[in-house]
Length: 117
Figure 1 (cartoon, helix red, strand yellow):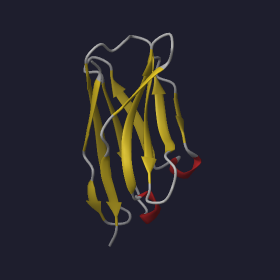
Figure 2 (cartoon, rainbow, N blue to C red):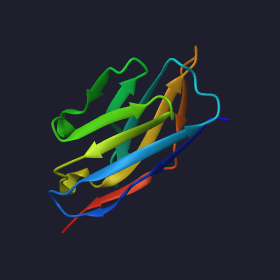
Figure 3 (cartoon, helix red, strand yellow):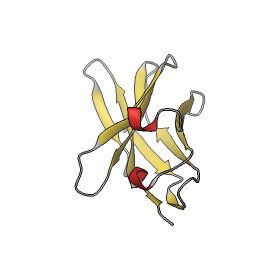
C-alpha cells in the first residue's frame, strides 16, 4: 500500500518562505514521477512542479523562479521550497506519485498553505 504524507504547510506573510515535504511509504518503484499540485477555493487542481526519478523538473509558469522541487531518493521524499510567496499561492497543496506500467496515481491528504498579512 503506497502512502504519501505531506507536511510543512501553514500561515506565512507575503514575501515569506515555506518548505513542504512529502514522505512516501510502501512499494515505490525506481522509475516514477512525483509532483506537487495545488487547489485554491473554487478552482481546479493545478500542477505546481514535478520531478522525475531521473531528476528532470518542470514548473508552472506562475511559480518559476520562486519555487524549487527536489527529492531525496534514499528517503523517497520530495520537497517544495517556496520563496517570495504571494497571496495567490494560497491553496491546499497535494503531493502526487505516478508509477507503474499503467501510470497509477497516488495522492497525499493535502496541506494548507495560506499567504496573508
